[in-house]
Image: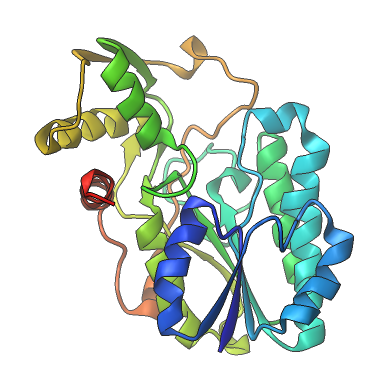
Length: 292
């Protein structure tokens, strides 16, 4: 099997590069090879690479910036996935497309099922939802995999790395405590994708969700980061983490207050339930601390 990974230099793409070679030949494509901002060029590129499967891990993920950069977010998150889906259909191959919890508005108080009504609150979530629709409309051999609150030791910055940086610089940090979700380690997400691929067939085409299990607010997550980091000897100046409300920390983009995703559907396929987020956090910090 020849597997094309888009977004190969991101935190998920980096982990996929480590895990997927056990399944076949991996073509790890960054923007220099597969640029989702130029969707008109994608069909020829994909045809030339001749993969047996596409894993689209590329996305525009700057949630706040997207509010003023809607055209670029639309290109990368909505239009390009549709073009990849068309290319996959024409080649007769499968497409695994990674999406987000931000397709929901966070108004309910129990885990979202794949079939629950979507209602994104901002440009980012809206663009990701339109990407989902495009994939469904243009390809019959697809898996849309929604996830949430992703962080990792590799790739660009994320909430965990930001907290570690701030914790080394400041004695006090204020963190939002009224937004709830499931922190997800990119390695565990990549592992789920690697486990899914052998099961991936047209019979299983559809929308799935994967996060680490358990629930936390951003405040809970931050406290856990500092607790685990202290044990591992990360340099910390921090003395206090103060919980605040969303209203006290206004951002350009609205975020769902509750975006916990049900993982029952993918767990039934894989035969295992996702590890708890606290375990993922601990292992990620150990990975980050280890000598490269």
